[in-house]
Length: 396
Ligand code: ADP
Image (cartoon, rainbow, N blue to C red; front, side, top):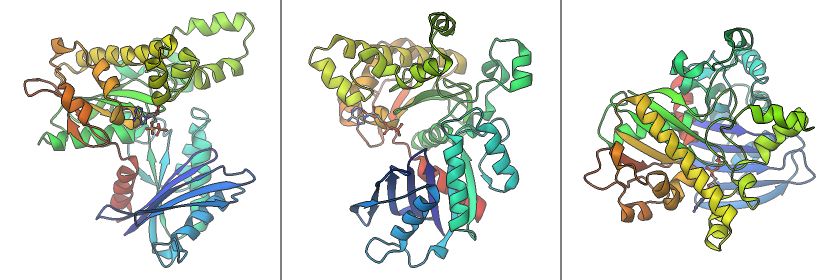
């Protein structure tokens, strides 16, 4: 069965076409700059990559361009779009309603629309992608896979904020958590690598990309995670602050900052970029730090310190810890970050093997020494494959 996986952002659509259940990637790519004068399609198939200048006025036009690339004789991998039997969509916020992936119907669409209130940057473009795919592929089964679903097992003690309880009752303000597809995927992989059943291990999963979050997985289920009502809470990220004293916002508001300015500051101008004043990209930051830029070094140190602090907290929350997993662009590629996050953690049973750590990049691997009670793994995430697997299960 051919399954198309779509991750629609505000001005981009990422896609992968899978053959299931073989899990073969037939083609994948990224359409950027939707709505601009010229859009850019990067399309890969058969170990070739093509960059095509095009114009996608909106997401509907974008989906059509992608489908054309999939069937076009020179770039195509299928003869006709009717071969695509199902489409799996990444949807960021599923609120409390969706504990798993679902087949999309009108009711599901209405719920995703409702949760746009909680994820204004993500759910509206996700919905646009769904509507565009429904229009272009009306006979395909459409499936929604939610970033929040894996975290619906988090108990109240970890998801209720210590605000007046009616704020939760009235507005459903609580911890939801994100990156669930990734945390679940690497937690399951970790269990498999360790030769255990998926419900047989306790693991802390660190997803470190542009957005960063960390999850405590107890017996296969998420019991706490660092992102909250929105993806702003928790770890230091590329441009997001993560945790800070909320009173700072009242203080700055009195100093004349508007709500919009504060929102923009916390989401787009903080984190690695905000502290360093140089870059939100870990590679640039590292270069700058090595060249002697003290604020770049400070940003790096704060980034790692926050992760380490959460590892300690989640070790306590889990009671018994079997493994820690690093994933995401930084987690998979930055041994220096991994080493600093796990430095001096012998107390909790973590002992990194420096050589294995440096050698393990972009591939699965164990980076702790043989006598380390807690195993630390690098496991490349594969959210697209996880979405394809769920979509296949439901469409079958
Ligand atoms: P997204 O969250 O957008 O999917 P990624 O998971 O691709 O992002 O992660 C992007 C981050 O990964 C960036 O901060 C980038 O600098 C970092 N990264 C990628 N390669 C390396 C590397 N070799 N060393 C350090 N950081 C890296």
